[in-house]
Length: 404
Image (cartoon, rainbow, N blue to C red; front, side, top):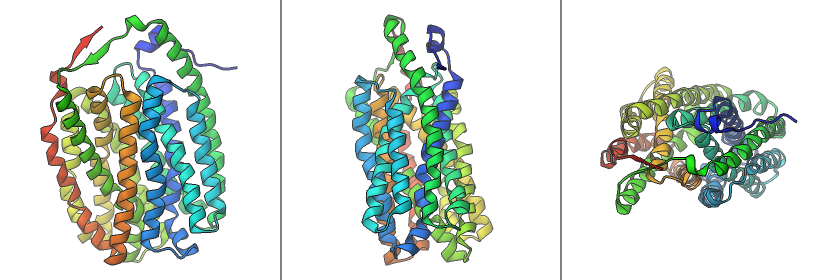
């Protein structure tokens, strides 16, 4: 049996092989999740759904993930479960298969709930793996990890456009093969993770814990600010992931497949921009990355609903590049606010991000039914202005100390 062993040197150094494998696993996980919103136009036609029901589908699987992730993270902070990553991928695979054979709206909701459960198990523990393999380069490690997820979100719609849209709902089942590849990758991760945990237990006294001198109230206030920023980012992102294709089809009269190509361009820009935030945050400070990423995208989001198809595509790429750097910086900043609570922080922030995405999709679907898809994009354009509150965050780089 091939094993990936941990040793004291690996514990201290950045383990790029593990970072790339966990990033690849994240790619597969988010690719599989992206299949469902990518085929909304097909599901809308097959089940005669309105935009409110489309929003409810997103709300269902993202709220399941949102509610469960903090509890999974809190539990695994105290009881690490390396092989739980495989269990999470199995839930996602079964959920996708059931979506491929779903015959009613209720059946669809039950199926996507399993995908939400899979996500709730995957993200907290995989974030911990990235943290353990970072060797102190947490921003870089989180960026590599997030790059995989964003790349998966980009590739998912493209594969759905060419595999599912032309052939029908049943072809979703072919994505289960990709899930099996993910299970194999996570098995390799689980072996390394188990060895790494054993090594850390054996060398407990040698490890350093980073602390800060912020009061408990200041930490809580900072966490609330970060969650509000997550709200602005993911509420806006939900307008893209759930309704961008409808916006393009309705305003510019392009085909479903053409709209998926534009969604791929946006998602690809998100994947590319992800690598920027982490390393820059490591070097210059995460607060500034968060500020520029969220507030800096506002001029472009406000222009997008009013321009031609060419400029919509161009602006969406710019928006994806800028906005994508925020999450890695926010997540690492939050782990520095709460040292030793990687699972809880990852579960809370991934869960809140999923929850805001799901809630946003449901609310925006209701607004779209009452007004129009174009109106949805006009009101969402102002959400990044919330990024101005980043100024109230403390500069942790100046206040951290190291204790043995």
